[in-house]
Length: 116
Image (cartoon, rainbow, N blue to C red; front, side, top):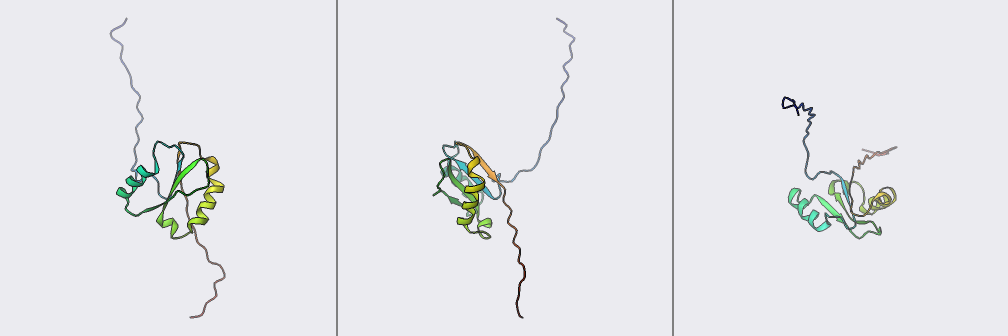
């Protein structure tokens, strides 16, 4: 064996700022997730007090709960949002998963008639 072997390392390094919690709008918790809704609720309450609403009376066999930013709920009713998630997101949730959902709400007004 040659004792004069030189080891060469090739390293790629990157980093970026993160925000806590690591989601901004919606977090879907799959059933039997190692991160339960009670533990996550306590953590989020410490990080952003009164920042999220928990929806846990859901009619989906794979979803335990949904955390929704109260900023989103100030723009769209909770029942309408849950219907949207049930239709477009919940079918792709598997047991034990945590899914971050990015939702942007844009409000447009057309043909506004008013008098001043």
